[in-house]
Image (spheres, rainbow, N blue to C red):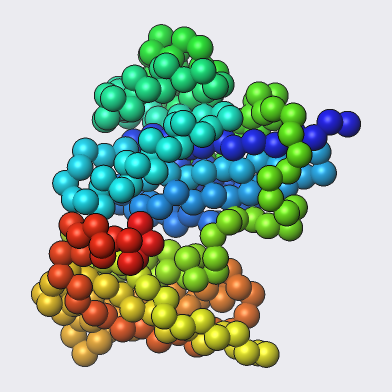
Length: 291
């Protein structure tokens, strides 16, 4: 039997369910998920392996209009994902009338590779609204395959994989069949901690945070991890630490639990909060933090 392999890139507006969908398709939680928009900042590859195929999914940041240098970098990830896809998964939801970034939508319309349009969160609206959304996107993207789904509830996700495989080119595997991502362990540790910041801290502070894993030591029965949480201002540092250090303690406890699930080992985690003024607007500092 022939072997199929290719890059399936996921794009869409913020908070339409891109990360939830990739995690569902992979059967692994690689991308962090919160209810807040712009949680995903990097292009995260997840690799689904089978004897007869290898699908390299790419989760990308939600398409945004730039307010920081960080946003410009995030949009570069989106632009690259449009140019190097073998199959594009464009995700919208039942609440979205059109993509919030018109230029990106026009680029999607002009793509020569197969496009699969997923109308997500179909469980949150009645059947008439869902049907209207499907008809709307069929008109907007006449060459795309339109599929309604609910990634959160794993509804109609399996047919997506079948459509992808039908459109994937024949090719040998690009990565070793034992790999689930091309990202190092430290990256996923930092993302888990950043997710817990979003879940524990309100308003705008999480958007000003970056996490840098400075130490990862694997011993026989435990992994010792030190991480810096980077903020832009002293006031943000105070909010993250909280009264008597309570907020930082809760973030650390929640992070350690999920890290232990991810690495399948006991973890000792130390977190520190440091100020790096206006890091989101400085190209040199963005490069330092891996953007």
